[in-house]
Image 1 (cartoon, rainbow, N blue to C red):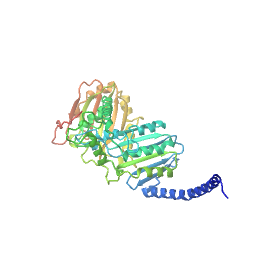
Image 2 (image 1 turned 60 degrees about the horizontal axis):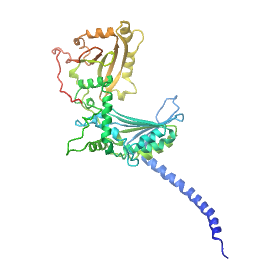
Image 3 (image 1 turned 120 degrees about the horizontal axis):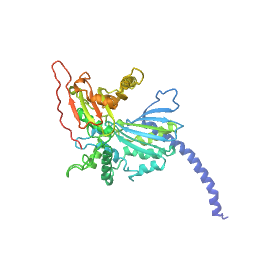
Length: 432
């Protein structure tokens, strides 16, 4: 008897479907097991940190096999997810002949990767999913970060992780990014905090690499002469020389569970190269103690009158448990009766005071006392003479006074039985 081929086909479909379902059920757990094994293999250590009893979020600290340190935070109430990658390399590692290179590299990483070659692929994905992104370069750190709609976090991590795996260093955008860096430099050239910092760099030990020109400009990032390595090649060399999983710290906060975040991070960041690099250290002192105390006046571009005292102290970063400098800052910054500010305010000399640690290099830091002067206080300060300062024998003092018509610097050696006040010469530093 002839059977209908059409009927036979319809009878076979349910059987194939059943077989397919059975196969699917049999294969899927195996795939999950393999994924779980891969994630477990990528993680060297897991730690649950001690947290405040008033903190409802969940935390987990991971160390991946490649050396990357990761902090995961699960916050079910968060309406955004966010991530930050800190690379413990910055402008202090700039070569002398290419100042601003670390900052320029930061810009170049945004311009496409092998899986996402479009120069705006990362930026477009972030903005299309209600997010924002940015980055900054400091003396010893370069930080990349973003926030985004939580459901889009996996795609953002896909694109973000490739910065540290397969950046293209897009040659077509090199000139435009150099112009952007120069624009950033020019936009803040009159910024008071930057002018103050630039002035301090002239006072500090020129052998300390944190005193260099960090931002970069068209001049400092100019293309090398023909026959030498190109600017793009120098950027790539700097990246491979300094960027390594061992000097990176990743933080991710999102409403998803910790196990989910752990899986996403391990899958995407475990392949970052481990070249056994270590965090760069600085040996040259930040301040040459033989040049202290020092005094300098700088004309402010704003209507303000301020005097700052900078005291070199051991870098307190590792003392975060006891916070000695915060305690001192709290005592000095108190505004209550009998406080330093209260006395100055009652005398009509000052209307503000702050204290705390500013820049540091891992060995030394600056403890700063900043006093905002009234017009009467500024007039009183200008009558003081540098010889009143030797008791502050380990201090750099700057006065930012409205109306000072020229920069004036007085350098004094540390007082001793046989020494007298004398100027201290310094070799000049190139400045763009």
